[in-house]
Length: 207
Length: 259
Image 1: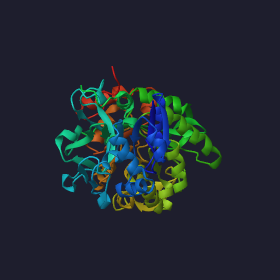
Image 2 (image 1 turned 135 degrees about the horizontal axis):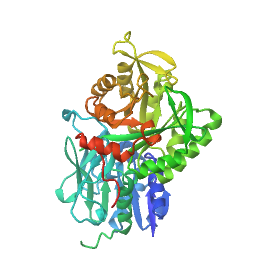
Image 3 (image 1 turned 45 degrees about the vertical axis):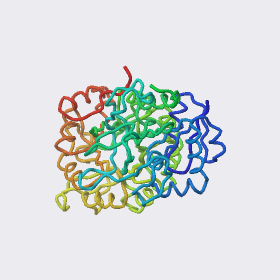
Image 4 (image 1 turned 30 degrees about the vertical axis):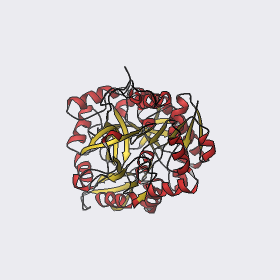
């Protein structure tokens, strides 16, 4: 099995690479759509600004590649910015995004008086029994650093939630596409467990 | 609920960890990669590595330490010391760090904060600030640089607000007066800065026992507490400190590995 890691100049891929290497995975880190389409699973990481990320994705044909990968049914994992730009739009730079999952990314509201970015470890509650969270207790903490969060248009697209001033969606699930706002590659042993679960995830199998 | 972070700081010189009192008389205490791995296994939330020599000859040794840490530590870590350009930032990020801390260099050239935030995102750019009590300053604290040896004309509170405005995503706030004393953090300073800015503040300098952390995370309004000697010399374990914070009613990450 080969995992493709999408390289689109959006922040640091090193931590995702080292975490996958630690798990003993054969990986290809690339910005070439053909090389990535040859992989069996896709990890789509990224930190930074949604509108500039979309610009780079489009210029390299990676937007088309990601849509194709998702539509052919192989497992895809978006991380952080990667979870936001699978939605239709982001408030950040008012960017048009990939539109694979219905919904938008919005900023933590100022009225809550919270420190932004939301940075640090926060507890995550997830859809009971989902294979991506196998072996991970409810309420386990994962590492977050973000100013915008995902707001899918239907509740059945919510994989997991956390709380910062108010409850927010911190993970999406749409068929063979899963995405987390937090960084599993930087969330210690439970984060590695989630990544390892992704490597074994069969989206077609009911659970 | 967002948890309070326990951050362990390792000062690295010539590839070895050191810890000095008031930045002078540093003594070697161990291999930073091995120490980082042990803290990781004990459930530390985040690590900070400062290159305290930061001479060009030793830069390579330090980058090698960062790379080896990144290969086995799966929690975030920040790197600081001698970072004066976007290229320096890129080098440590490519070596595997999540965040870069700028201190004296940012005072001398504040534009580096804007440039770093534009290139890598605000979440990457940490302002390291050393502050010393000074009744002549408006906020009561003066920014000092070069490890506390050189006073500047900047007021600590004004500098914190300016750095946030320029794009810093976090502030590591070190009290020169408290640093190395193990008598507790500088609570009024920490509280003043943390309440004024809209970005997270990591309190640094003065930790000697778990009660000090509980105090700065509650009364001092800090988002995270940085420690070094407390754990480097084996006086306390990460778990003991976290259990104390938990008992004090502070949200901390206790479950960190599968049973």
